Figure (cartoon, rainbow, N blue to C red):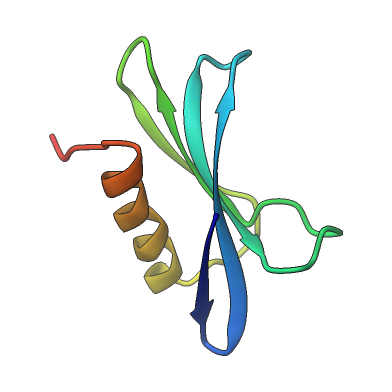
Length: 81
């Protein structure tokens, strides 16, 4: 788990595996708030190599999405095509 602060709010970036979907992911959560699920995720389908960004909130700052994408490039090995 990695903790970051964006615009005064704490977030956690967690790595996980989803066997049912066949891949690994990074999810962005509000730190310390388990009532709210993930804010966003980057999912890497291992079989196809496809990468998907999912937002689970109506609005998410582009800069916050860019932080998650940057982390995915490092920790999931997501490469630009």
